[in-house]
Length: 204
Length: 251
Image (cartoon, rainbow over all chains, first blue to last red; front, top):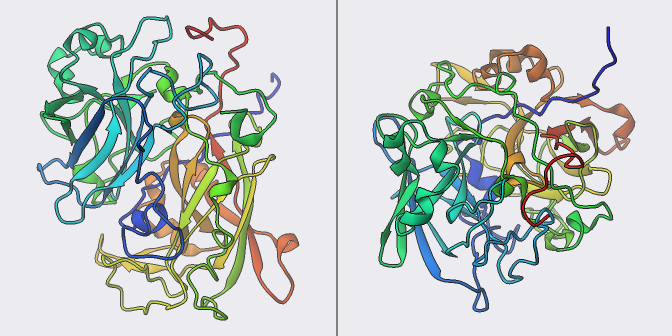
């Protein structure tokens, strides 16, 4: 026998369930007066630097039905490609932009909307620049472990073509599942949990 | 931002240990029916963390309200309190290296003592408690410790099988230091026989893994003539030391 490595195991995940709003967006589901506002509901203010954009995201199940009980969190760099995080060693990010947002899907339409800014480019591990992207984390009833993916931008064709993560996709036909379509100032992004158009989810 | 969450520790920039996906429930757990159409079927794209996964926002203690960690009172009318068995839930958030994690945002939600959620989608016949909302939050201290006060949630039936009941449980959303540590889980209670009947808990393949989600009755932490206590530790992904690794560009 060798020495023990003394490592713990990560707590196993359990689904967020149908009542995730109570915990994460109580004001959204009518529980007022406990928190002043729902965390992550507002991402930008007047002083935030960068191009204002909207995101319209839907999550669809294996039958193509839109989920109305999902919750999405996003995490992104600022307009200069800096994260507002202690792990960011390259400089100070825009103090008027946390870069994190949280939105439940609308209970009627299933639509999730974020008002944010377009992120700058962030370096990959070897220093090459990744294309501008936003990290998504999706939880819902029926999802046993939160799903991790990215949203890239349709008007960044050149950057997308040299992105080291997109380049790893063996099946090139799946690349478009990670690219949001620009419509005026808004990017439209459908997350397919299953099926022919299944979104590429990450293990990272 | 200064050091991680007001701590004096040097910020860590290492990538996270690979997630052991055999320890978590798989995406498809057919006995939990909703997972059938919501489980990805294609292979995940695996890659070592980039800065996008390593980094994460900081939530300061200043955002917390006085009653955020007191579910017995944070929705109650003045002078009143929630009905049910009064309990304290406490524990630490650790990473896989065993280190306590400061500055972790914990958000919890639960049914009331009768097993009813304050949510328009919940039609269970057990009544709402006018003094119970069901949500709370805390941020871990320097050693990773946290505590909150609540009432023990009741078990409740749910439309999965013809007669499925959820064991008493509290949902936890855990926000660590890196976005790749993001986790939602559920805490169960020691001695509850319903745990072993539950298709959601049993979606976790390894019995030892399920047992890590069962909080222990902690008599030493009870407040005599007031509240019993349960201890619930949570473990998030550990980080590699970046000491001997090629630094990320600019580090």
